[in-house]
Amino acid sequence: MTLSKNIVLVVLIIAISGCYHAKITTGLDPSTTVYEQTFASSWIFGLVPPKTVEAAEHCPNGVAMVDTEISFVNGLIGTLTFNIYTPMHIKVTCASGSAELDVDSDNSENYTVLTRTQEEFTEDIQLASEKAVETQKPVLLKVK
Image (tube, rainbow, N blue to C red):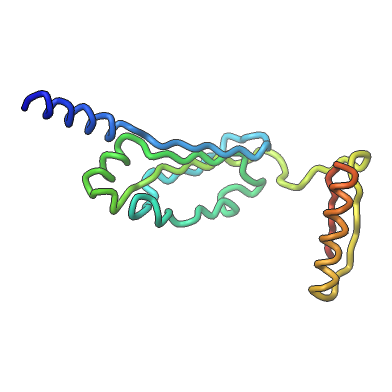
C-alpha cells in the first residue's frame, strides 16, 4: 500500500512541477522596455485564453519578443482549482527601432496601388503574390 502511495506522490509532484513556456520573437532588436502580466487569467485548462495584451499601447516601435509561461506558482494555482482557473505569466519585450518593414529595393518588387473596389484589391493581392512566388523575393504592396 505504501508503494502505491509513493507512486501517486511522485506522479503528483511531477505533474505539479511541469511548466509551460513559449517564446515568440519577431526579429526586431529588443529594447529595455518590458511589459509584464504575472497573473493573466486563463480558464478551463487554458481553453479560454487571457485577454489580448494591447502591445501597441506599451511598445510604440513594435514588439521584439513575447514570452508566455505557466510558472510553478501559476501551475500550483491551476492544480488547486482543478485547472478551471489557470493564470499565465506574459512578458512583452518592446522593439528598440522602428517597426516599419525595411525593404531593400534591390531585392524586391515595389507596387503602388490605388484600390477602389474589393475585386480590384483581391486582384492586386493575387498579382503581388504571384510576383513574390515567381521572383522568390518579398513584394511590398502599398495601398493608398
